[in-house]
Length: 561
Image 1 (cartoon, one colour):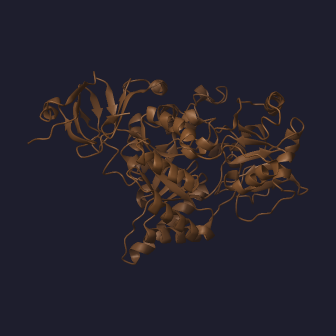
Image 2 (tube, rainbow, N blue to C red):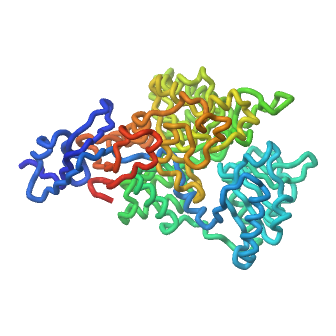
Image 3 (cartoon, rainbow, N blue to C red):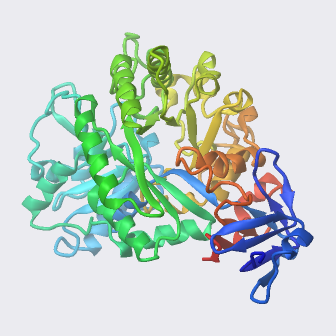
């Protein structure tokens, strides 16, 4: 007896996102899979008494989207923080903080943690603790840079953390900046891993914020992503075992309705064994139908805006021409990491923004892969490079040649981070950033994600919002000065990405780092039934209207969610 479909969706423009970039008129769904993709006539052969017929009324249908790099746990942990307005002037920012603290006394807000401020307000020396002290000194204050790669403390916060002098360069983050006299300025780079210092502050303060990642705190962001058509996420940093367990429990309770791929953070080279052991423990405890972890995450450098990315050229503002930024692992060390991960069959996801960092990663991958294959063994893992903001022209062909995967945060393309990087890179190099067209032309696998890290930018996790910015090179909220940049278009203008290319990266290519390309990413017979029904045909509207696209329905494994 022939199978009877649960649902037949017909009269649509169903973009399969397969290698042929073809369309179908109808799909038949049974349980959680597509059992027919093609004409209405072919799908109707699976029609039975219980089959639900759904008229798509000519609307465009796409596969479910995959966010290849975001931070749901980090967003959830930030919900208690104060969301500050956008300011261009430091005194206006600090006046706002002062007024907020006057309206909310210490017993109500014992610790002011505000996000986000723009680094464009400061030069390469960064902000100083005394500037906050002048406005608020009765409680600890932490102001977060909107890149999440720096923060700014007042003196009270440093006192409560027990930091009286610079701990020195230990090779581990966070990096406390000192002035020429050795005094701490209050500016801290890469504070992501400084939780123990904050815990000391909380202990001395006798108060602790609600930083635990719970279903209640993470659900709003996950609901938002699903409403935008996202059916899978890779977590840029899994926020500890508690977060891994949370997603596992949500999935087993039928509340997740998306794929979650965790990552285990490698803090530095010497911690590789510990990182692998932790990842294996999480695999054993927290693998479910939709929750998995097989990826190690590492920060190879910092940011271009703060001058701690790994650069091939000395900093433009360094008269001595000796400062090439920072790199957190040597090429030899990274090669060894890749060799070990290949033995373990574990993938690697690397944060890298500078051209020296990108070149180092490519060199290490090439050497490790060659060493394995020269020994007659099999290369079994993926390396995905996230961000890749500045790439030397000679390295553009290497991802396709070597099989390295690239991940780009689409909503950054319009100049979201402003012009601070010009101080370190110079205008000529700044003008070449965020260009992935040459990689795409040579056949590289390019995936896309949002990389949102706090409530202040969570709304930018909407893929349609980000796609418009990468298609136009104009930021929808903070466009560049049109007097300096024609139409506020961020250079180079020819780096605009096509809708077709981005959809491929959000669907078919996006499934590859998850190792789910046989299950998700395209609308094909035998694949999981994930799809998005759109209110507009994104292939026909102007690029300036992409942000107005909204899913009218989202299907996850055969059910509309």
